[in-house]
Amino acid sequence: MKIFLPSALALLATGAASAFAPSVSAPRAFSSTSLSMAAEGSDRRTFVAKTGAAATAASIAAATGLPMDAEAAATQLWEPVKLPFEDTLYDIDFDSATHGYLVGSRGAFAETNDGGKTWEARSFSNLDPDEEVTYRFQILSFKDGEGWVLGKPTLLLHTKDNGKTWERIPLSPKLPGEPSAIVGLGPGKAEMITSSGAIYTTENAGRNWKAQVKETIDATLNRISSSGVSGASYFTGSITNQVRDNDGAYLAVSSRGNFFLTWEPGQDFWIPHNRGTPRRIQNMGFVEGDIHKGLWMTLNGGKVFISPNEPDLTKDSFDFREADIKTGGYGVTDVAYRNADEVWAVGGSNTMYVSFDGGKKFTFDKSANNYPGNLYNVKFFKEFGNMGWALGSNGLLLRYRG
Image 1 (cartoon, rainbow, N blue to C red):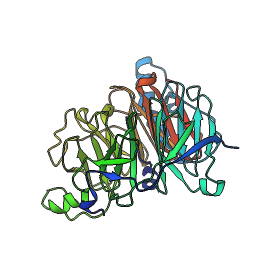
Image 2 (image 1 turned 180 degrees about the horizontal axis):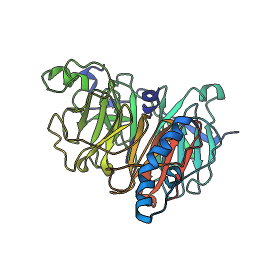
Image 3 (image 1 turned 180 degrees about the vertical axis):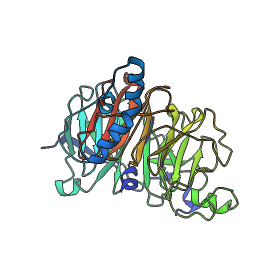
Image 4 (image 1 turned 30 degrees about the horizontal axis):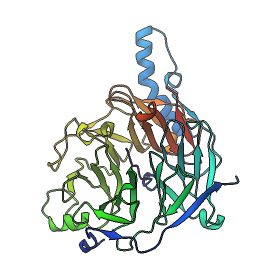
């Protein structure tokens, strides 16, 4: 399962080692909360549409002998879905082919029971409207009817009954860094990562958490000051864009975007790696959700790089190759693999691109061309018919129709 943090929103525009105790007990009692119904284009983008589709038009014209307009040749494989609010969307998840949730800014929270065709706003009955809009629900994870929601200011919610009732999970103030992502792993089980690279697991629905890494990232890098990774020595700060692959490996980018780190289950420490380019890293992720199939990386200026299969995770540097993608300078905020060949990239000004050759060459998709704003997240759910969703600002939700 992929976890994507909405730090792409910001890109577009120190914990003590003693805190890693074997177990951290929650100091406060739980409180159950019932869930109730809530009452409730640009010239440059046109240029990107035309230039991004020019190669497609040329290839079609060469094959058929007929001239074609470049923008007309662009694909349009997504359709908008109406939502009961217009807030920025951060995450979406399903626990069945029909039932899922959607979260966003200003307390945005919606539920579907028909596979995402329609959505109903939800709210928590113990939060008054003024308090609820202060929360940004950023991360959502569901598995077998059990769900977790992570928000800011720091808020962790848990349900055991498909969202009928929720409980607020208290977190220890001794946690190094802020909780930044969580994934459900089964009944009462979850894994959480913080902005300092601390990884914790729980097997009793959040009452206790067990550390999986011996020390924070800054502690590791300052102890190994001669790592050979540019920007890693004497590092102070946090990590962003934390993502988890299907087998529990993690990937994170330094807050300055000048290097990245990897971690696999069983390792005591994170391993830093050079970015291999002077451009700042915008976001990173896994090829087909598997660290051993490779990594993708987006850089300032709309660049996309992809590493080969079976990267050597012990090396300081990876052999990334640049994808052929014409973005007109718009940043690429997220990339997702629908399968080994079909790859999607989304970014600023609601631009979308698709590759049908495993990420070697991308062409423009005009599905969101008439909507203002930015796209931040694209996800596919292989376990539920490979349905796909793209999330953005102004309440824009796109559904993949193929």
